[in-house]
Amino acid sequence: MTRPLEGRLALITGASRGIGWAVARAYAAAGADLILLARTSGALEELDDTIQADGGKPSTLVPLDLADVAGIDRLGGAIHERWGKLDILVSNAGVLGMLAPLGHIKPKDWDSLMAVNITANWRLIRSLDTLLRASDAGRAIFVTSGAADKGEAYWGGYATSKAALNALVRAYAAETVTTNLRVNLLSPGPISTGMRAKAFPGEDRETLAKPVDVAPLFVELARKEETRHGQIVRYSRA
Ligand code: NAP
Image 1 (cartoon, helix red, strand yellow):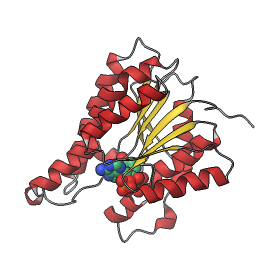
Image 2: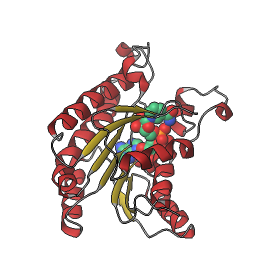
Image 3: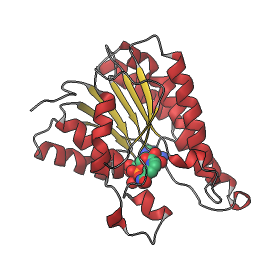
């Protein structure tokens, strides 16, 4: 069996459930060493148990709220001390926020949406850039959404955060074009997760792709052989 990520060190945010959970399992099966981040430590421990029951290596668990930007800096420092580099960043954690007319969104809800979906991504870049450049083939994958371009009523908060993420990551790709780093956005499309169920509660979940379906695309983008850079890579079911 080929293990395309054998020995690669990967940080996955939002690993406790949904897409990040499936990516963690796929990366473990592909041989990566994992740093798994989310707020819910019990869910991270269960994931680690599942990975080891499948024959995978123990993961490093980071229970952290990404709104805690000092915590992001501490994480960068800890990775530097222990490994001196990071091969793969999967910046997947995100929140939906309130689906509501813009005038109805409470300022504190707006701020916490932007804190997780945009500011945390910038702070991750700021804390991890040197470590990703220290890898022989650093890979950074940021999870965006088609909502960024749709201009739909009631989706203004979430769409704004993902449009800002696209701008942030494209700028980062432009800054790293001459390095060993490959930086891309991944747009998963509709995937059956808790977030999707919150956005579309009446939907038949059986009609949707599952997190496990999109996970191989994350493996592909993390491989040393990957050449795409500065792109929005869209998942679509065959
Ligand atoms: P999900 O099931 O709600 O999972 C979200 C993950 O993010 C969880 O692991 C959650 O862990 C983590 N997270 C949320 N807030 C956090 C915080 N403050 N600090 C640290 N971790 C936090 O969502 P999903 O559907 O898998 O979404 C994953 C990514 O895909 C998101 O960026 C989302 O915008 C994007 N996306 C999803 C879809 C879809 O249809 N599902 C479509 C387009 C884009 P804790 O709660 O344990 O912290």
